[in-house]
Structure formats: C-alpha cells, structure tokens
Length: 182
Image (cartoon, rainbow, N blue to C red; front, side, top):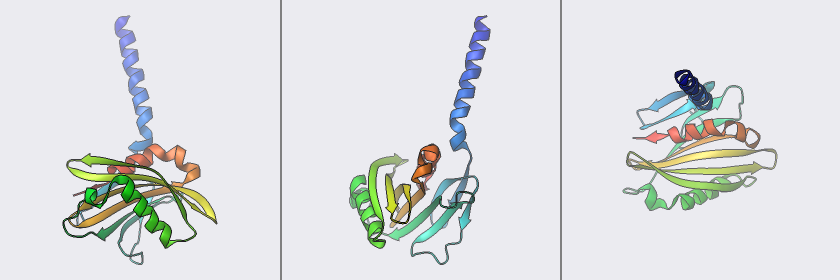
C-alpha cells in the first residue's frame, strides 16, 4: 500500500512538472559563430532577411502566425576597454536605451518596468523589461538582454502585444534568458 501511494505520488509529481515546462520546451537554438552569440527562439518562428535593415541589426526572427511577435539582435560598437557595468547600472542603461528608442520615433511612448543584472559564467547581462505605446497601434511588451563582449554592445530584444503578454510571458522570459555572447 505504501509503495503504491509513493509510486502514485511520484507519477503525479512528474506529470505536474512536465505540464509546467511545456510552455518553454518548444524552443530552437540559433548560433551565430561569426559574431559570437546564441539564443533560443520559439518553434514556428522564422528568420527575416535583414539586408535592408537599420544599421547594426544582425538578426530578426518573427512568429509566422502572430506576425507582430518578433525578436532581434542589434550589435553596436563601444569604446575600447568598456564593460557593461562601466556603461552604468541596469536601470541607467535601461533608461538610456528607452530614451534613444523614444527619440527615434516621436510618436512612441515607453514605460520602463524593471531592470536586473545576471552573471552567467563571468559574463554580465542586463535584463530590461518595458512597455511601448503608439498612438495608432496596440501597446507592446518587450524584454531585452544586453551584454558587452569584444568591444561590442549586443542588444537582444523580444516583443509581443500587451494583450498576449500574460499568456506567453514564461516562454518569452526563457528566450530572453537564453541569450549568450562569447
């Protein structure tokens, strides 16, 4: 009787754990060995041609069903010897990032939500979260992961509509956390 109860408990625990991870388990891996970064992206997303994109845009992926959901990697130069912490705290970098993005489109309003620092194998990343509103479009929710490596600033950004944010937040968080530079 005790063995049966224990076996049933283990089975239920496994089923619950499996159910909790299905929203983040369907990810593919993208590796850019030339520029030195990698990340996971959701199944059903495709890479978009970036030949005519803005300066620094290195990769863009988009959901084939929810076409407004996308992610991008932007690479820019930083002065020699600069590290991410030397550029400022996560909050300072996040506000500068939003100010520069809002300045590019005067009709865009951005609200900074959170900023955090994570260290992965000695590499510092800043994790940023913000909402963006446009006068003629639905509000957006964005997550960004920022890192400095080999004299370059890498900005990984993943975005969805605010209406879908609650439903896909765990998956988007896993994707943002998967971004790595080397």
